[in-house]
Amino acid sequence: MTTSGAKSGANPPAWVKSARQLERERRLRRTGRRSASVATASTVLFLAVVIGVVVSSPGWPRVRETFFSAGRFSDAFPDVLRGFWLNAEIFLIAEPLILCLGLLVALARSLTGPVFFPIRALAVGYTDVFRGIPTILLVYLVGFGVPALNLRGAPSDPAVLGGAALVLSYGAYVAEVFRAGIDSVHPSQRAAARSLGLSHAQSLRFVVLPQAVRRVVPPLLNDFASLQKDTALVAVLGPLEALRQAQIHSADTFNYTPYLAAAVLFIALTVPLARFTDHLAARAERRRAPGGGT
Image (cartoon, rainbow, N blue to C red; front, top):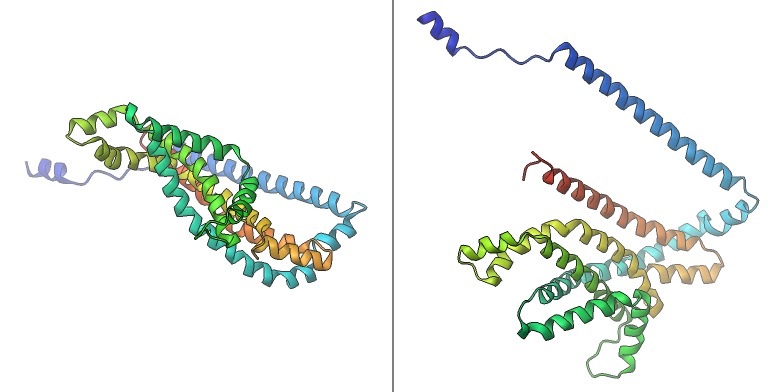
């Protein structure tokens, strides 16, 4: 009895990988290293060929002087960087306004009942019109049209007017993103919420919207990456943001390297945002996979 009790109370033996499993893992590691080596070699070879073709072209010396002048870059970069803070400011102010406007329009389009038809029609008209107008044209219309009306209390700052145009334009796109997220929630979720005694507004707030917002985060971040680039469109109204500063330096020196300085700044901000978007999309895909967790 004591011996059997000791045996039954002993810890089970630790799991040990079989020789076949160990060989399979070694083979997978070799395959991964080989794939990484091939990918690296092919990338280096491709870049070397592209650089060789560009550098050996007859017009390369002129292009290098016009677009890649280190001296012009260092001269223009401080002013371009100072203007870039205005781009960042417009982006940070416009982003929450776009989210609020887009969510309100999406909720307006989700209203049911004949009494809400005027609101639904207004929301549909807004999304159709402002998605159909090119953003740069909308910047012109708002930036020059609003001051021309001579309305008392209307803003006249070109940065404010340009930001308002971006809010109107991107609000229409974000509204459709939110509406797609709301429509993607299964109707049984609403039915379950109503069966628990929640009102329509409560079920929308506590059940539908949390799921919808979580699903549309990656496309929203993609829209905001585009918004950060499109803040440069405000330059057509005259404020001294990054693109406008680059234009001034290029006009003074007849050299396009200042535009490269502006491009570097925009890339430095949008690329991390794009990679973060990819990370969120991959994480959402893993969650949807069987056994992916919550």
